[in-house]
Amino acid sequence: MFSKTAEYALRAAIFIAQKSSVQKKLGIEQIARSIDAPPSFTAKILQLLTKDNRIISSVRGVNGGFYIAEEARNLSVRTVLEVIGENKIFTECVLGLKDCTERKPCPMHVQYKPIKEQLIRLFEEKTIGQLAGDLTEGKAFLINTGKQKRKR
Image 1: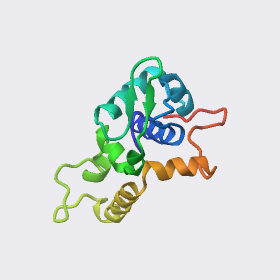
Image 2: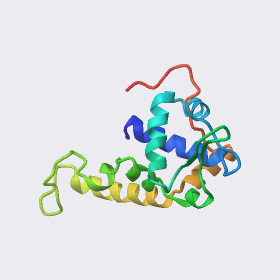
Image 3: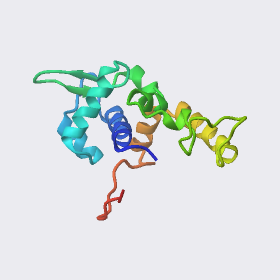
């Protein structure tokens, strides 16, 4: 549904929200391992998320690392997706047609519109903190645990 960048960004934000605090910062290696992502790719994603100054914070040095401020836990999943440029799902035609409108719909427009509206609501209402809470409570998982890797 999303690019690898978006998947890893969401996983990273959720993991950091679950495990970090201003007093307890996380390193790139730990984050990458915990979200099943390559460390170098994780570093690039975290750079995007910290550059925005709303989602992830970082501190350099011996006691440095990444953390999420308490107020950032209330940010929506949509905010994370928009920060990394993954907002097509909210704004574009499902078939990628630029001229798709209510008056000039693509073949999927009428059927997809309510689904798109529901996705928008879901991603606007779900917060990073809620998803992190689901992990903590054991209601959800963050990485594949089976032997077979997902094919793309």
